Amino acid sequence: MPDSDDGTYRVWPDGTVQSTEDGQPHSWTSDDFMVITASSEEEALALSKKMNGKSMRTQNAAVAAIQFALETDDGMAFLRCHSTRVA
Image (tube, rainbow, N blue to C red; front, side, top):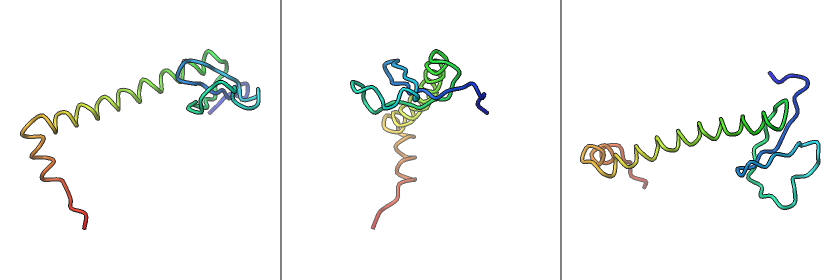
């Protein structure tokens, strides 16, 4: 549960951090920010990096599974057995 002293921050992939109390997102930034509750801008950035790291590990595992499926006989057999036809 967030501490009562925590604020909310927008964190962009390039490391830009902005308090939501500042109003609208910076005009020069994209809309691909995360909104994070934290006690400081530094903590918000650290939390976003931690969450992005988990996301990348999940994505890497998915890519590895697809590569296995496409590059091995066992993987191709799995895909053939588990494919469904759409009528």
